[in-house]
Amino acid sequence: MSDAFTTRMLHVSTGSRERVVDLTADCEEFLREAAAGRDGLLNIFVPHATAGIAVIETGAGSDDDLLAALHTLLPADDRWQHRHGSPGHGRDHVLPAIVPPHATLPVIGGRLELGTWQSVCLVDTNKDNPDRRVRLSFLG
Image 1 (tube, rainbow, N blue to C red):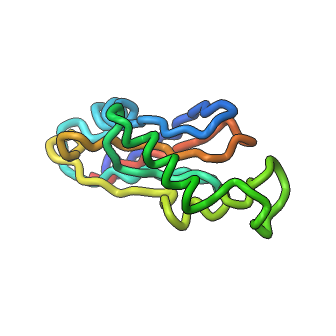
Image 2: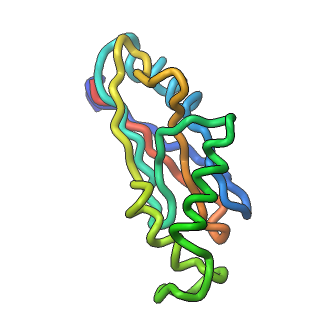
Image 3: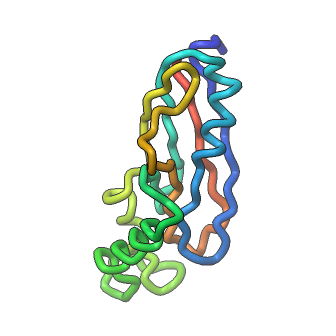
């Protein structure tokens, strides 16, 4: 594979509860090797039908606010047509329409170009799948 495109798969354990997992440090570590000081794009993709990628503030309550907002928009009850798994699991399959399974971000001088309070996060509301994969790809 050429050095213009590099990819790596992360394995993330989210456990048996809804989570917002900060992946920013993982992205930065990947870029130290893959970008090696170059400009380009970082694509973050979660190949799951029940998880998404968000660029949000973490640590000040916004991650919990996001989960609360998702509960309001997508209640975990029996209204969903998709009915296997935990009660309300059908909502997890609607999540990627609201929190997409990907983000593409600028990389300048080998560093992720984020705002002061922005973090790259995996959003996982599916309690039935505690093991997630996240693909990081750098295009220089």
